[in-house]
Image (tube, rainbow, N blue to C red; front, side, top):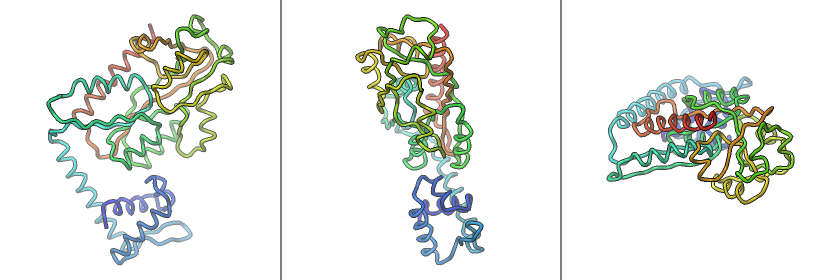
Length: 312
């Protein structure tokens, strides 16, 4: 028996479903069933039984799960005690969408750290699915997920199911990003029709919980043009924008110094409202560290700078 098995059993009880629990735990149904069976065999009891109405907890299972929840609660309390102490090693880990304002906040955070102490920092740019999975499975403390506001109900339900806390960071509309030599760079009042002959650069791994990927791609990827380049690494986008004529992409607003550094401009497009939200997530029971709080402060500053640039 191990701690993970306790967590698995508690999740099965909460969802009353092996399938539902496996989904929430980001694991396969056979693996979860096997883990529960191993747990029952090690204890010599039956915790769950299947019925026509789903998974039902046995009387012995109820007693065991009561104790299991007590153990998990005590472990959380123990972790919280030691999280309060000031660590010798400066640790920080987060998964984020590919966004310049978030990268700026992280860079400023790193520059604020004490270089005489050890550092263990992890910054991973990825999609929302992997950001969630990194918290649940890979010991990441924080994540930032990005979704269209029209999909918010799906993400709120997912965060509730996975017992994740969340706080809004920024709700914004995408802007078109292009090189300053782009044919549309100097045109005012851009509309959808202006992009029909352009090439769109797209981050090719969108995610919305409970929706099929084909539907998600249709909703996430614009229909302004049938010419698309799919990429998975943010640095590539600036090379493409600068060296491939007629390319553009949809991004969260950038600050002026980033635009200048990469020789690009950002423009609003009339008649196209792509409203998104960036949301900070972390495990329920996790206590933000001092470094975490400093990062959040830097996020707010970087966001304000991007807003000021866009509003001119």
